[in-house]
Length: 40
Image (cartoon, rainbow, N blue to C red; front, side, top):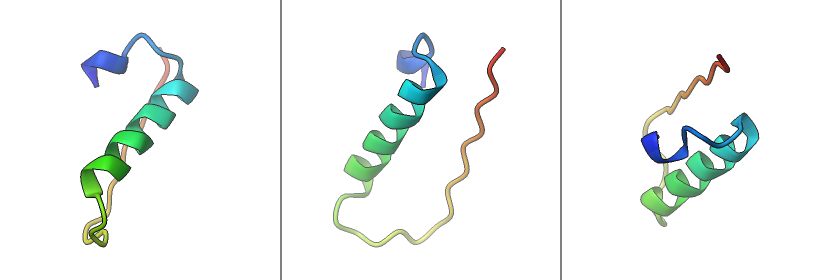
């Protein structure tokens, strides 16, 4: 998350989704994931 802190919220969302999909791979999702972003 430190690597994407300078991106806008939309770009951060895209990067996080890409990273999660790559991390999960072909496995089924077994847990809920919740990330909340608050612009300051």
